[in-house]
Every structure is written in structure tokens, then in C-alpha cells.
Length: 180
Image (tube, rainbow, N blue to C red; front, side, top):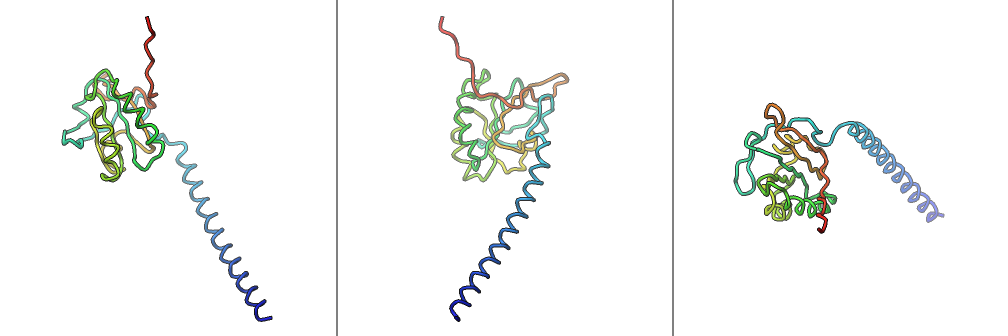
């Protein structure tokens, strides 16, 4: 009989613990659902026609990078080494950037995250872009209004000399030339 009482007590304790943990998970899911619902209406990057914000930063090569120094069409790519879709999109971005009419001077890639974790991305991007490594609240991420990764957009000087977004979701493919 004492063994039966002990077993019932252990099972009762496990059930109570399971109930407490389940209630905690449900509460956390509700919080995340509310946060996600609030975010759904917000843009995840600057939209077409919006002006690129001010930024004054340096590339990993030590080159100064400021909004007012940029001319022509600029391709911006923003990636994070902790983002799986970024790992998938990075090779396509590199190939696309390699074919940019302005070459490396018209491509800026930002890697958001720890410098050590970003080293692999930076090495892959360096041949085709000016690379900036920064924290999530860095100058480039803020100037481009980035809230999701990966983000690829294009900006050009508009009327009045403002640098404005002309494509807020660049498709990373180029048309192939037809054989003559």
C-alpha cells in the first residue's frame, strides 16, 4: 500500500508540473502572437519612393561610406549570418552583384551580427561589394529601415538629389541573352 501511495503522489506531482509548464507555454505563445500581429502591418524595409536615411560608417576595408557620397544606382543587400534564408540567398546576391553595370562601386552589402560570425559572409561578399559589418541597430540597417533579413533593394538619386528607393525587393536574376 505505501508503494501505491508513493506512485500516486509522484504521478500527481508530474501532472501538476506538466500543467504549470503547459500554461507557461500557452502564455508565451499568446505574447508572440500579439507581437507578430502588431508587426504584420509594418514594412520590413524602406518602400519604393522613400528616402534612404543618413549614414556615416566604414567598410571592413576601412573605406568611409556616407549617403551623400553615393552616385548612380546603388544595390543594397542586408544579411545576417544567423538567418537560414540569408545563407540561401547570399550566392545569388553575389552572382547578381558580379554583373552590376557599375561594378563593385555600385553595390553595398551589410552583414548584421557579431564580427566573428559575419566573417564568412564578408569574405564571400568582398569581391563584389563594399561590405559593412554592424550590429542590428547599426547605421546601414537604420538608414534602410531593415527589420527582416535578407533584404535586397535598389536606390537612385531622384529629383532634388535625394537618394530614394526604386526597388524594395530586387529579384536576383538577370535575363539571359538570346543566341543570335
